[in-house]
Amino acid sequence: MVLVRQEIGDVLRDTRLRQGRTLRQVASRASVALGYLSEVERGQKEASSEILASVADALDVPLSSVLREVGDRLAVLEGLSFGEFDSLTSPVPDTLPADMVAEFDAAVH
Image 1 (cartoon, one colour):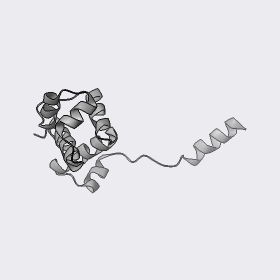
Image 2 (cartoon, rainbow, N blue to C red; image 1 turned 90 degrees about the vertical axis):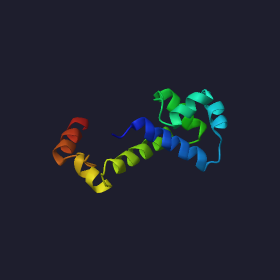
Image 3 (cartoon, rainbow, N blue to C red; image 1 turned 30 degrees about the horizontal axis):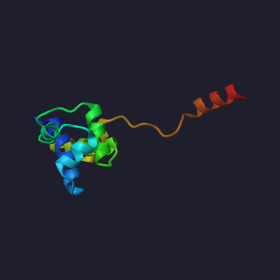
Image 4 (tube, rainbow, N blue to C red; image 1 turned 180 degrees about the vertical axis):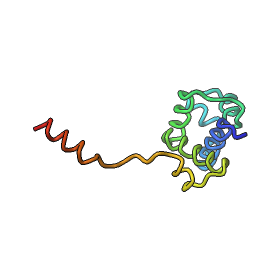
């Protein structure tokens, strides 16, 4: 079974190590206990969204980037390629149907 907390921890640790930062530096900047951040990185604790946001901020990366990386890794672990994943979701149209546009135009004018 894939554990989301493990992947979150791996992404946070990989990001920190790529930046050459110590656990102590990131924990201090994020105002998170060193031991707790260590447990989060090892997948032993599930961090709240507030803690994740603080750690992402301390790493100077958007939380959305961290979560996107976690999602990508989970998809790989689940055996889904990006093409397969796309077929599982409903496409969101980038245009409005002509009748809806006409109805809107009529209401505005």
